[in-house]
Amino acid sequence: MGALSRETSGMSTAINTRLIGFGVVLVISLFIATQSAFAVIGGEIAYTSHGDGNYEIYSINPDGSDKRRLTFNPAADLFPTWSPNGRMVVFTSSRDGNYEIYVTDRNGTASRNLTNDPADEYYADWSSDGSQIAFTSDRDGDPEIFSLRRDGLRQLTDNSGVDIDPNWSPDGRKIAFTSTRDGNEEIYVMDANGVIARRLTHSSAGDIRPEWSPDGSRIAFESFRDGNLEIYVMDQYGRGQRNLTFHSGVDSSPTWSPDGSMIAFSSTREGKSDIYVMTAAGVIVRNLTRTLAIHEVTPSWGPSSVLSDCGVVLYCGPPPGPNRCRSAKHKPKVRRRICKKMHGDRLGNITG
Image (cartoon, rainbow, N blue to C red):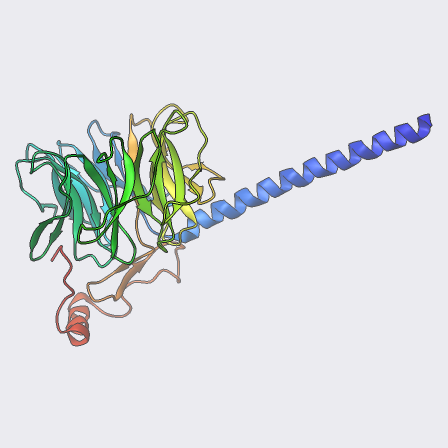
């Protein structure tokens, strides 16, 4: 019996050792596969950084390479969002004395003011076709959501509560946003024309900053419901709300990768705000920035390719090498002629 016991014990130890070894191999394999995925998904991540002494807009690749600064201004430049074609970034800036909505090209040149109002205006987001920009404005006395188009400005919300954080659905038909109209911060969805607002979250804690997934089936958001700020996800109807981050640090500002498989966000889990990337299921978290900056926050994940006004591919993201595409064979003037031939004129992109 003693021999059998020892044999059984030895067998159990061997099995446990093998299982542990298998688990380690599995974790390493998942890590390597996910790191490879970061490199090939494409799209740049724009974000706000305080690394140079004031808030500026930077961008970085999903694998942490090619960090570059897009704005150079002594004022605060905040809350970047990529345009759907990847050519422009809309952001908030105080460079004219109050917060206004600005736009710049992907290289940080030719910045210009889009709103030019004495009230503060902030938290801008593009419609899926690039023809409109929704943003928050205090111009009527309290924060409301407006949309800016080529033909003018339109107010979308009008109530005594705070309406902020607009985010367009991928099909352009809905806008998710944060509102206090029912007493505390909750996530709502309204039609793109501002009517028929529907509440998605019902928590006594604050739920803020909604972000549609690329296929429109899910919405990521921030919530205080577990005692600190975490990243949650739900379906487009508000069902299946669950925590993705489960960390004592502040996890905020979720933004989806172009294919919906990853989420970038900012977190203080290592003591200061950095930009992180995780899978859409909330696992395999990676710190992208790891700098000495006080704050690196509010990421925005851009499209995997950069398009001209008429949809001609100008640039595709990683991997580098022969698979990287650039405006196939056509110089800018030729592309413009192709565009006019295809569409009669440039598409009605708000940036002109």
